[in-house]
Length: 351
Length: 280
Image (cartoon, each protein chain N blue to C red):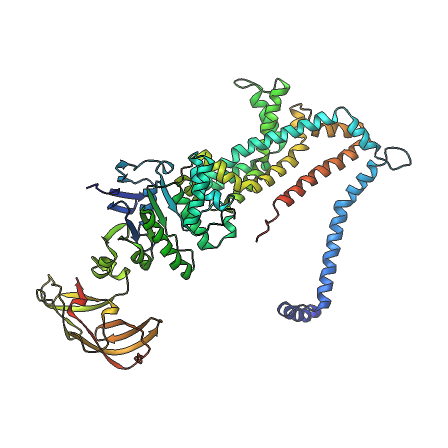
């Protein structure tokens, strides 16, 4: 089982009887970038803090590079950590912040200086070494925090919502920066976030969590297109959910609001059972060109720039359809009757 | 009665619109009068004391009283002793309060009110009670400290450290609240720092300003403390001043001015050090 560079086996954490994390099992390969994704209170940060050593599991085992570190002190794990609040030492310059871990390790002054310069170069802030943290912008401070975590050549890099305190534009920029640096150093990384876009864009694999439990582990494409549970389907990306009645389970035939619909997934329930039909908004076409066609009325149209979001009332519920913007696009108008179609492989069924 | 009813309307209106210049001037005048009265209340005795301290020789203004004061062979030893006592008490208080406040903030925030109450006890317990408690406790085995001058001095310094708790704890607590103690601690931990290193390299430097203000307040209290020093038979600055008042005429006034200057210098240093840092 424990073949990973970092592995968590049956890790569980309780706080005063309340379960924060339940049977967490994960193997992370060396150099892999894994995200813990979920809403606040899902246990993702608690799990990260157990890996860092700030919390101890109630039961289970954590091993790193083949060594059991479950109860190792945080300052003996050689793990770099980046915090949401940056947590730079305000009394030290940027250079001293980055060099702090090396100083603690009693590395000699010349080697330390060299390493600090190297890292300042890596985060593209070569001339900020003698500035104080309060003189930098939020994005720059978080880069310094990243450099500080990397300076000690950690076995593992942990990032706890590192972009949450930043503006949208800086966030995107720094997100790419983090990925670039992670690839360049090939450092095993755990990234905690509640932002699905961040998780999808950055990760080799994503662990989706809810209420202390792992819902699904998989590559971003897999998580998005084949969500294992209703929670994953609705938490990651936008999703339409229509009530449906099973007509022929083996053939994937359903009835939605009086319209017959065929899916490529088989349904293991008896005819007449109530299920849900799931559809991604971007897989809907606003004409009758695809196999399944549903009729409805336009409720509202939201222009988001590259995407136009159309809300459509249909028999039995509401559908959201996303269209790509085009300069010649004719926007639908609220109140118009409209047809929505989608291929059989674009939808799936949840019981 | 009628006049009152009528006059409320313009005042309410004035609260919304900018106050008329006339009214503003009147308010400012009132403030100045109050300020003046308070200033007189504080400054008059001081001025009188100063004036009296200059009259050591008949019919002339002179610094003779100050000269005699500094020339007194008991003055400097008493002052130096108090200085050393204050320094040691501050150090002791710091070593007790800083780790305590840090630990409470980090690990036991629910204990904060309890610790706060304990540190306030020196305000509640009069010095006389404190010193008699100490004498009773330490004049018999297992630990006898009241028998020699030097061991009594240890007792005195410990009592001063306790007296400083209210100031020191509040100062440190304020300092800790102003920073993200938990994240800074965890960041340092993940970088490999041990508890002593975290306290010394991360927490202490960021508390420096807060600690200085606590230390200077402690200094101001300890330097002139009388009751405890007297009952422990210590030849410190407080008893020296009291003795002087009983036996001399002009020197006590000079002494009062000097003590006042020292206190104000301490206050000035606090103001100077805690001044907000110039931001870019």
